[in-house]
Image (cartoon, helix red, strand yellow):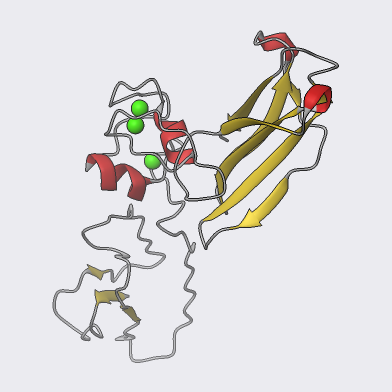
Length: 213
Ligand SMILES: [Ca+2]
Ligand SMILES: [Ca+2]
Ligand SMILES: [Ca+2]
C-alpha cells in the first residue's frame, strides 16, 4: 500500500507512506501544517500486487477530521491545539493565557486560548464569546435569558442551567426547550429562557455546563 499527497504514488520508490506487510495500518495524528490530511490537499492510495497472482484487499479509513481528531485523547481537537500552541501537550483544565478561562471553555466558546480576554458573546452575532445572561420582559414577569454559541458535531455537551443561588446544589437544567439557530458549518446559536420570573425569585443565575466525554 502506498499513499502520496498531491500526486499518484508510483509503483516503487519512496512515498509519504509505504507498507509491504500484511495487515499494515497507519495511525497518524492530524497536523495543520504537515502530512497527513492537510486541509485542501488531495491524497492518493495505491495498492500494488507484485505477487503474480490474485490477492484480496481490505482497506478501512476511520474518517476522522481535523474538527474532532484527538489523538492524545485530552478532549481538545489536536488541530485546535496545534493552531494555537504548535503543541498538543496542554489539557482542558490548563489556562495558558491566565485569563481564568480554561482551555475547554476557550475551545467550546470560540475564544483564543493564548490571549487573556473574558469577552462576553454579543447577542445575536458572531461565534466568539462567553455565554451572555440577560433579562427579558418587563416588571415582575422579567426572566433570565441565556445565549451562547455551540460547536456542531463534537463530543462535548452544552447544558443550559438556572439557579436561585450560585451554590452547586441549586443548579437545574433549563426547563424550557432551547431555541437553536444555525450559524454555519461549525457553529449554532442557542437561546434559552428561564421559567422563573423575578417576581417569583428575586435572584436568579444562569450558566452553561460543559461535559466532555
Ligand atoms: Ca488533543
Ligand atoms: Ca485561558
Ligand atoms: Ca483566552
